[in-house]
Amino acid sequence: MVLASGPVPVVNLLKKLTLWKLYSKEIFGISQDMNSMSIIKKDVYTYAEASQNLGSICDQVILTRREVVIKHPDKEDIAVLPAVELEEMKESLHLLGSPRNASRLFAAISRARSQSLPVGNIDDLSKSLGLD
Picture 1 (cartoon, helix red, strand yellow):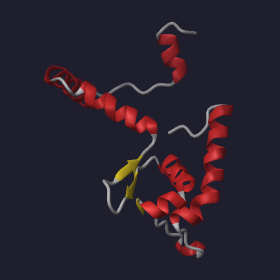
Picture 2 (picture 1 turned 180 degrees about the vertical axis):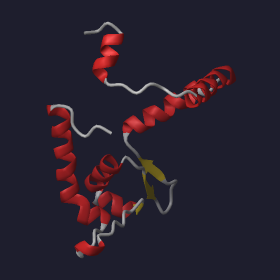
Picture 3 (picture 1 turned 135 degrees about the vertical axis):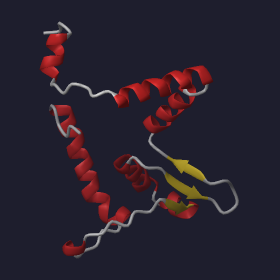
Picture 4 (picture 1 turned 90 degrees about the vertical axis):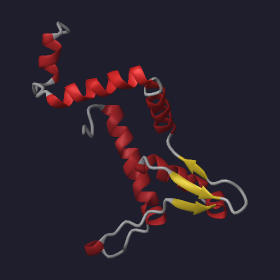
């Protein structure tokens, strides 16, 4: 995992840390006792809670990359998740939608897992591809 590789990732990381600082106590219920810092995150909110805390809930979803369920007393429950996660799920469903394509994907995954791949760095890869 690369935490920072230039100005944009550093800015994004700082934004996430700032949001974490602002919302960690409110969203995650972080214990005041630093020796036993526990995170109690809510994954399910009532409709009333969600309507009062939509901004915080959206920040929670962005920070944790996990879905949150909002329960409505008289209607169907809904889920809030990052849009990129939804797009990735839709793409995966599309790719696995045809049996032939799914078979090829699983075979490729199996081949990749069975091979030991060489370890290198970006400079070596660039040179091997003639991209210097």
